[in-house]
Image (cartoon, rainbow, N blue to C red; front, side, top):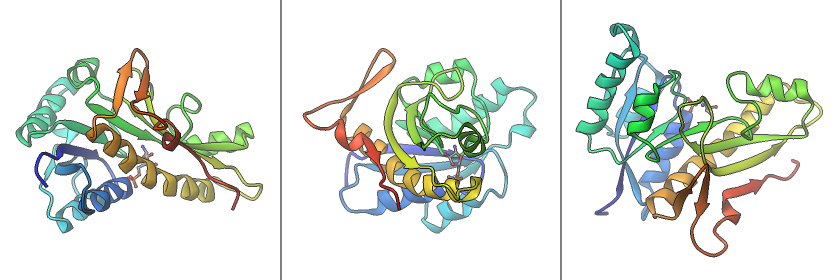
Length: 218
Ligand code: GRF
């Protein structure tokens, strides 16, 4: 398919969200293609997934660079050389500088395993359990310089069950991550997402609905 949105995916680990994006992009009619997978960790599991799918990979180890700026400049070079139009962070464990984030403003998205703005940062499932919330979930959002902030594109709510520990909850949330990340990329690629201040608006009638899913008790 011609004219598909060129997506680069940045990873640091196992890459299950990357896999969901790969699988979606292989489906006929999906409006985005993955042009490059970049990891800051040599040997990250997701690199293997990309190679298996025939997607070009690059490793830009942050440890090889004296500061964040030079690391990001190498990263930026890889991203640009692939003709990237949208960057998806998928378990990419480096904080990006304001300069990089501003350069890619509204062309840089992230997935986070909580219903933002609750539980920014790490260990989201442990903290959701400690707080006793009845629902948690996951969020795809545009990236802003402050960590885990930015216009929300898609969210899915997941119930916290009485017997849950962090692992069971993480598993249930992860299944939803794999559904909403491809959905968010599709909406962007179809030109349906418009950023209005700190909110992302989904254009078109009734299109807001599929961007907020609640998963029933199982
Ligand atoms: C996911 O839970 C994602 O939300 C978070 O990091 C994890 C990455 O998992 N940002 P994977 O590498 O995609 O399997």
